[in-house]
Length: 124
Image 1 (spheres, rainbow, N blue to C red):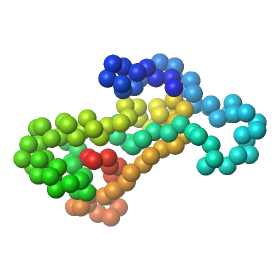
Image 2 (cartoon, one colour):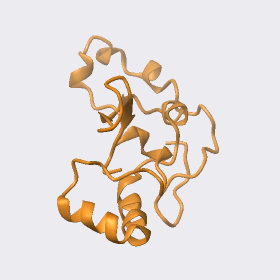
Image 3 (cartoon, rainbow, N blue to C red):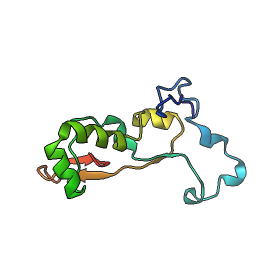
Image 4 (cartoon, rainbow, N blue to C red):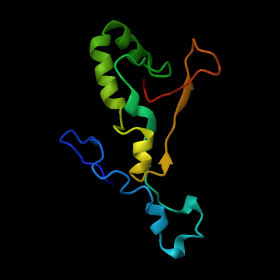
């Protein structure tokens, strides 16, 4: 999809910028009237995980064991959880430019935060 897969299976920056951003305009005319929910379209799993880092807190909805490990050994736990949690290397604009048309946004708020203080979450 316009990106290059590295040895670690993550996408590096796009080489062909905007190469796939308008792929839907090239759909076969027979598909123009098909409802979107009947089409298979490219999407990104946990869209917002590209911006997670080692300082991102572990979600309060994760297991008690993971919470305990995070408190006891954060220098080990956080990097491991971060590696499992980050599923995207491109930001939202870059994902859309690459042709993604379905965004998986998982939203939560911090226990200490206000109701309006929303965050994206995937384990952290």
